[in-house]
Length: 460
Picture (cartoon, rainbow, N blue to C red):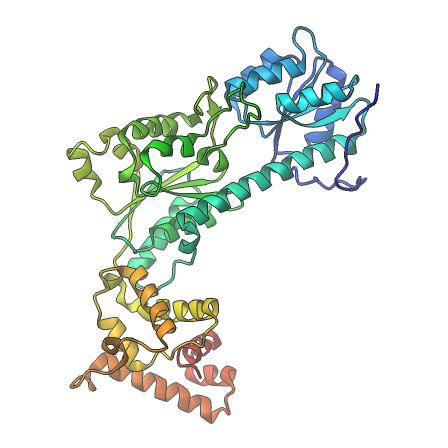
């Protein structure tokens, strides 16, 4: 018989590095206590969680309680073989990657292992670095699969355009930051409400970024952007038809968010049948993909957003009352831009610098007249409208007339005079210091960063 050599994609290491395993959850299934102990001894110091089972019955009970990233499975065991068990589990909803270990193998066994869904194959006897390399390959594959899927999802939903920072120092935005800081270390469900364009997704990303899940995935889902007949499949995934020529499972967005944060935007647009399923998932932290008979344990932080009036939607029968009360634990209302008008200058400067760099054009000068007119506008489209105005102005090479020029009779307005005096004074001090910004900041009694920001805004 021709033996199958285990491929090694990275060099063996004799040191104590964790091979990227520190966040992995692994289940070892083998009827031999010595082999189980050997594998646990290798993996436990390097992994987040390692459990062991002497038979497939024990394994199934553990898998019903905890999600495992990888299962290391012996092929020759009493009763059914590891391959037979794996084939059965794939049909009922088995979402871990499997590594098959055996002392007896030929090409036919390897082919059967791949068809059953094993992603790697290790021959006994093996050294510790061989099993570590096999596990590392599985994790690399899992992470790459997740990153590719999430990238495609974000590109399709235009979610990538919503990245950014929660800027501003107004009282309204400081209150939002305080709530985010209080909620970040807790598993509490958060609901962001407010008008369209107020930055609900940016606030959700900020919450994720300051939580203990920051190193895990942030998965944004726009419930209005996915058709009602597809959204359940996209969220929960499905197990393959075993009779298909090339059966392949589809991990849903819930599975890809495991360990991280799932952000469901425009939650009011979720179809009623999916609302019922979502309520159960939130309460039980388990999902059942389409076609599966086993539920998968889930570790996800749920964050929601809407610009709709949810109590009105509940009264009209468009939104489940029990789901509304379940997600409305901590409601963070996002302020309108006209209620934080003091942040317009900082936001405009950030958008000007970022978008001009992205477009490869020179930034426009935010003059006193422009800043005053930006501050006087009501911004019905909120921060998104401000961003679009800056981008449009950069493309055209000038601001629209209603923002570009000063308004007659307003030259003595207190807001405008303050901008004019501030600019004249800072530039005069800079000139007196020979352009030395650090010295100018010292004389002005402000930070160097403040002087740099003002100069960038004025294109000095």
